[in-house]
Length: 364
Image 1 (tube, rainbow, N blue to C red):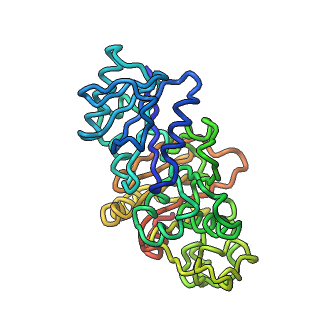
Image 2: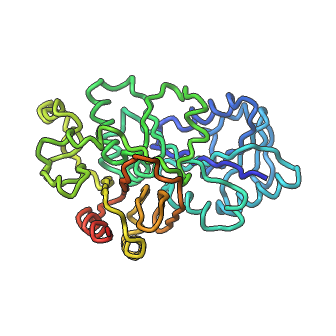
């Protein structure tokens, strides 16, 4: 039997998670969805779509979808859902887990890998993060949880963009991109999102493509000075940059003058990319990554790489969440394709220099 896909929906308070969720539930085009809510209240799912409440906190909705509330832990809820589905008591095609406004999606994601029974039934598809454009600057400045949610995302939806100026939206998008260059950003109105942008995104697949916002990878984009090299992709590019958020384009280096105060953030959630055309020594890399994950795992939100390893003609793909890391052999390198290793790390105050130097020392 094929695995049941799971999506984690996270986001700032008031960012419209519920609006998006309701829209997905009403537009699910024949798919039945089980929704697991981390916290339950009237404001989450409208009472008019709720039909009956049972002791088990599983609620059947009029469109055939079901809602569960996590009063017990997530693993138990998932196991209960799987058991009821096997016995034919419930039917659903996928699950969506809606976390509370300040939840850390990390442990929720890890549940799908830590527990064998869960891993044999469910497949974690992606983490979606909703960002409220109007309150984003404040929330990102004040709440590390909000910054972490951005770092974890496979896809970022920006809501309430119509309430802010084009400049503010642009600054926000630059800021988010430097926190998480691998998550595409989409501005959404009132949760109007095509289902194809919500489901089956395969953000947790070990696939051979590593999507990083192209202008983030663009070496030429960083020709002005940076105090910390967090946005440079090459150890050799340690030019200094004062605040990275606005520097994707030379034209943005004057935003400081606008008095928006955007330029004060040096967010603790940052990303950086390692690239090399030399092959990795597998044993050295494994030892180094193992040591790094041991020390910094709690601060490592998401990391992923497509690697050129000595001794194999195939790409090696690895990714991780916190301390959990997995790797797999991918497709062959194509004829004429440059065997370039690329890795992206997203985390909280990670020691970029130590990681880049350490990776450099793992090369053949």
